[in-house]
Length: 374
Image (cartoon, rainbow, N blue to C red; front, side, top):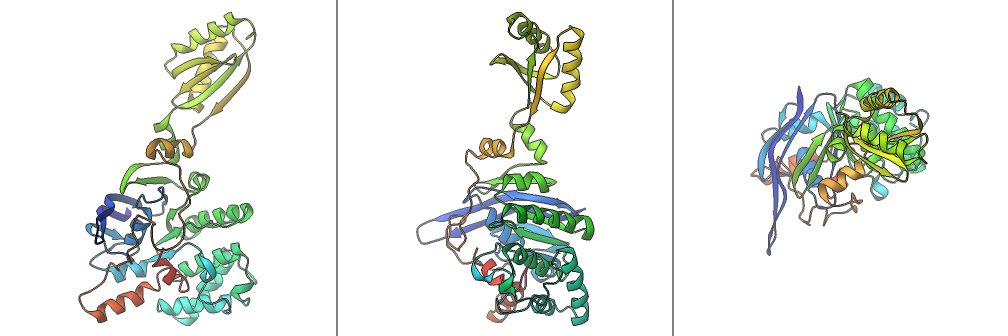
């Protein structure tokens, strides 16, 4: 069952001089319980799409449902069902105030979502345990490390038990050990809580390690969708490198090349530095076939290796650009400096104010204001 379904989602920004088509008609389907990654270079439309799906920006065109609620018709319903953890930026990361206790932040977040005090305490205790925040509930936010603050932000985004959580660059600024720990916590959100996770990241190794599927956006359109392995295979096949015994005798290498060139699992074979380099579709399936072919001809090998294309290769092939870190701040993310317009903005000023107040509780209470400016 799809928990996120977007069709033709688009957003234009108009200034006095020109109109920028930041997102040009995005189709996204995310199944319940998936971890999906959303990748795109600077100005590709990634941040604008994320804003629209979290009701922080009203689409110019298109439709979407998130967790069963219509993005335009029921933005409040969307906000009740999602958690949003924005990028950790400046002193606001980790809550509303450095001088608040961790437990105070969690209780205040529950209040913002109208969860009862005792129920919030129960949920907070569970999240503190699940996110390795044990013993920190009576600590001031300002005393936490960067990794602890990031885990607190995720806890804040989960207090109301959302069906979907949007994580925007969850490990930016963390050291390698904290990043690895964060990956484990993200996996456990799905395995233990059944949470669907929509993840944006600039770390391709992170996307490879965590995501069931990836959406690659460029110039405002989705240019590729698939599992990490599927996307790698689209770019090029796996590469098998074989060193044949007796390679000093060119005849042995030439014979092996002739045999393998006609194998149905081999796409291309070349000789490089005295070794055979074979491009194959599925390396792990091709290896036994190659070994049997050579063994049947009495040819033995001194070395064999298998390498696969990386997501870096995929990204460069699809977009022609490298995946660079977006700079935090308002202007320039998707080629615009416009202030976000809330998806649920009504005709009356009072309706807009009420909607904005609700939007402020999306994700973390302390970083909602920042989220609106990313």
